Image (cartoon, rainbow, N blue to C red; front, side):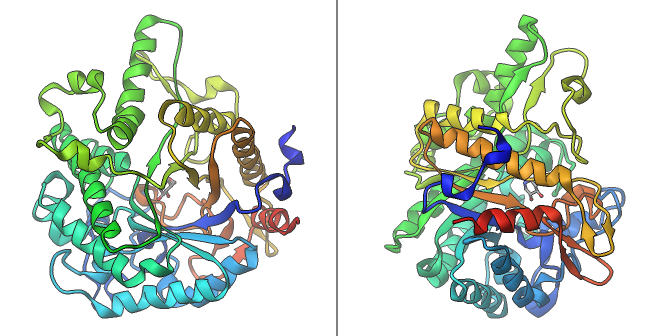
Length: 441
Ligand code: IFM
């Protein structure tokens, strides 16, 4: 079937259709009503770390405009919204008192979504760790696991019965590798040993939090979200083939093997040598809690080369404003592979989208490339379903243009355009297409 022919009725009736955001990227109000600073607030203050020198102080003003944004979400016709709680908004230092004003904000938001019949898919950690915990070593220190578990349990105790799913961490690879090894994301550390410790503590805290939250007797679906891509060797040179296998180990198997089988892959551990994660007896069993779902954030495929850097232009495919190749088949391949190798109960496409250089002209954003991208990836999701893969959701990234981390506000991923001067929201043509697609019965 050609992607152009994809329609909503081809999907199961209970399929979840959503849009996604995260707290730091949209909320603003960085110090309002008792919120504490997060690692990203601190990182933005370091000269040269954010491409346009911006920060999250205002972002999309979602903290003020949440009612308008709930209407916007409902107006799209989606049946689900995925967002995250800012940990330092509800517990300013990550270990002390709760901030009731912070919890009240999310309480109102959840109630407003529910009142409109929109499912609530909540992420506990989409990167904005309280700075006070970073001051003690952050994810590289084992103590953070206890603090995260206490935070997760409190959120679940207050909101759990109204939530359709809880995700512990969004993209642990990004937090650990970009944040603690490459230093290009918060907290800006450059140490492979710390990065591997961070990976381990993210996974361990995930397992501990799941145990504790399930101890509350909740029926809410619980899982984790990973950034995953198929990885191909750049050539048939055996060195490239070996590099692709190792990279797949470092990015996919290290997480999936730990979560699903309770072990880290031997080839990856051997490769890491002295930087291997600090595993204590019993940790791996804690990590491998049964998962109600694995969330997949898919944007592109990757190539590994042992020699010259691989050039994305060599694919001949369209490349997004992030420099990422548009490759919808990669999503089908990835979902099929996860199903075949790991058999998770349920896979959710928790993020998928593209940044392009949009132009708002006379109230219209004619973002054909994004429209095609979303449509073709929905079709790719359908192709996996047809091959028997249990996929339950598609969430477009993102509801609206927002703070794209180290790229600042220059990279626009939204289905909805945001004018950052006036905060006016305008549905792009991709949003209008999604709305029409969702209205098909
Ligand atoms: O904006 C991010 C999001 O926060 C996590 N996944 C990838 C997106 C695009 O880079």
